[in-house]
Length: 245
Length: 339
Image (cartoon, rainbow over all chains, first blue to last red):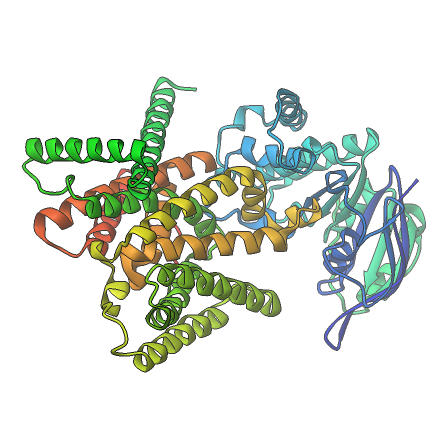
């Protein structure tokens, strides 16, 4: 089954093109790494996929429906850059934040014991049950990532979209975090990951989309590693972050 | 959970229960006052006045016997519930100045209301017109925010000063047509609270509390992570509009006692105090309302006993609460952003 399908999608901020004529498909169970230099339109492309922005031209489908008509919000778990960078001063506990994953299911009805049981399971799966009563803004970067993933799990999402989730997270927590993503992907959750560390992406993802306004490569990871897409997309002088093991 | 944590939670629940009982009693009192010409309720009204007389007798005051004081106190208590309730969402969306802006819009509404009531001769229209203009102002702020992609400083400043400017023009135009002192609306006063104004506050309270309870989940999600809420297909624009319209409604009700200039304080200061001490969002709401009650009741006591302006007294007590909360807070996190 196709989770996301983009066809000839173009989007510009005023006169400045951000995404140009991109066609790509994400299938169920894929782990797609979305890479490209700074300002290459990665985040914009993800926003287009999720329906946060409307394309100037082209079509986008989510789970087989036009993205503008898609309303099964609980099927998508989204961790934005903004969500993970700060947290602000709002006193929200980890449990409250994870419970938000049930809100799209509940609508205006009260949360039931089942909802709370699903939240408990999600906390357990990512290993932060002991942090449930702590405030999100008091967590370390790695712990906060897990809280957001738990929120996506609580919503029983089929698609997990993450925008540079490990910025400011120490190396050890980062490895553990990617292991968690891998095991969720093994359980059948489709993942779209924006990541500036190309080594991490090529290690974990089974599909790569490399963009710099235009799509330079879309296919499996092996063919990406063998291709020149990276140098083309980043340009000869581009700074490429390699991750050595 | 620790023993102190559970004791603290229990105390908060007791405080909220007491506040709820108090608010319901106040709404009851306003209802009795409104329908006192109905025979059965007339008896209740007389009983309430007798109870007030006894209260005055024992306290050595001259407050509770007078129905106009009931209305002022009831309005104050209800402001102390709904202003921090709505304010909790505003403060944590960094929209604190929206309240101030909407108060100025409401001032233009009062100006229009004065004009309308002087023309029609119906004094009850004043607050209703202020409410309508306040809501229209809220929708205008929302429209500007949508167009400019932010609740930024500039559209806010334009709305704030613009509506106040229009208000002064209308008041100048209508000068001499009414006996109502505009100054009371700018600085707030117990004497501003009319019977219809107090009843309006009761209706506002019931509606705002009901809507906030019904949309608690959605407002919380949007406040915490607006983008994720959009992805979860919550109608963010609709809930933002709902929040801003509720703010306008609360501001118009609260303006009676606090005045245009000070009304935003009730949306912000109790919440800032509550945020210092709260561990969760739900607790923030509870503590904000409790601080709101302390500010209103403390402010009334200070104002009546010392013959000081009510609005100023309430705000000063609220800020004292905030400073105490900052002092008591053992948290190392920085004080809440007030911009």
